[in-house]
Length: 78
Image (cartoon, rainbow, N blue to C red; front, side, top):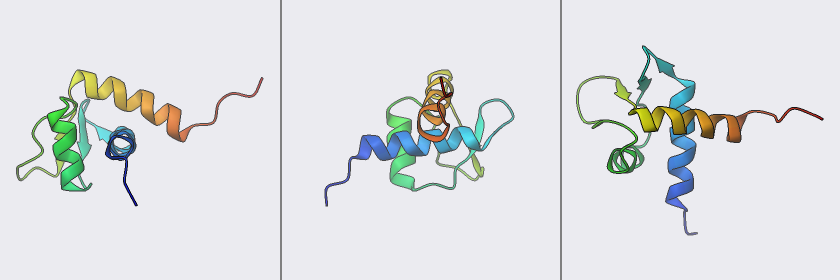
């Protein structure tokens, strides 16, 4: 099976928004390769370190909220 890494990255970024605290920080208990790709894309700061959370960039914060709403909320019924 071929995994679409961009889709996995989007899902993890959306889940980071779910655990957001202190403005731009989220718990980094996700797969390290995914966190590395999100860092390469400029959506989070370098996840390597002793901290149990990662810092989202302004672009990452905006995108994570958009993805969370798109993936995990119900559209209003009209």
